[in-house]
Length: 201
Figure 1 (cartoon, helix red, strand yellow):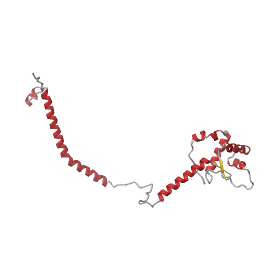
Figure 2: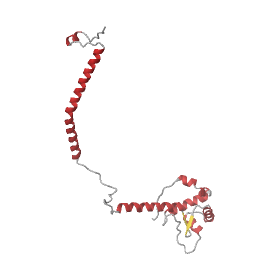
Figure 3: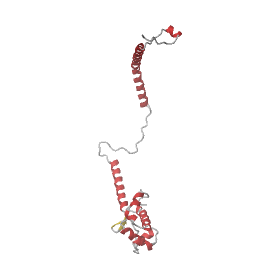
């Protein structure tokens, strides 16, 4: 089957189209059936009527394709065309929106095909579906070992810095305690009674 089986439908565009909104519900329903047929036609967006040797009128053929009453289709087609809902190209009814959207779609497909087939550059295009990078874990293991070595190298320096900070903090505490009259008791006195603060005169 030629044409397209589905397409994007913008509800707001259908409801806000001034030309279509001015038509009767019967004409809008007929136009919807015609759109379905034009989406399956080749070229897309054209109401391609089957050849008829009996030279049946356009309205009669449309009524057959849309399963509509032929007595009303002629008037509905006149209503749609008068309101400017559809146009004609070489006498064939077309949907301007569908023809325009199909042209954009074809241009996009051509651009993508050219992009992935063009090898004139310095580096050929890669396939869009590249295989995942499956590593055996050796790189991760080597990186982990390297991190461990770095940590072991820095450990002595870090320990030395911590000891210096602790000593400086202890000295600072002693100075502050001396300002408020704190007397650090001996170990023997600590066992007998708690710390005490001696107020200076």
